[in-house]
Length: 180
Image: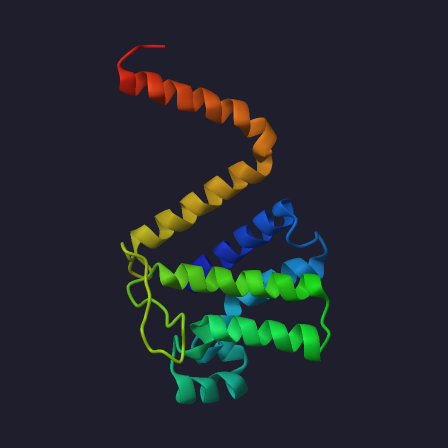
């Protein structure tokens, strides 16, 4: 996916994560999600992060290539272990970083190129109906994600329940052929 899509998905991930109680409303937790959503593309020297950190991006790209180790579950597990147990980073910050990182992987999983989720096994995994990066499909999926997440966040489970039940009943009656 494109940088703007990853950043949008990261922002939505932060919003949903705060609402779900996975991270706090602290600015560092939210910034960690936004950093995490960009971090996997450190393996691409022309990415937004790669251009700013060429000293890291170029060597990683040469050794692993784009969508290599940085697009795997291994790096999330190793990174969380390092941050929590060796560097003793705040748990909310580590959770935010992991959630943002995972949002990036989930977005790239939806593309034709897929991701090597179980690196070093080189098999790439992708969504059964993959999309092309930069396509109208990418923009539609991101827009739907934003709309559904904002709706869920604004309305919450309790207040949406009657609306969803009413909608469910209307669909059931329509499919049964009896008007409401």
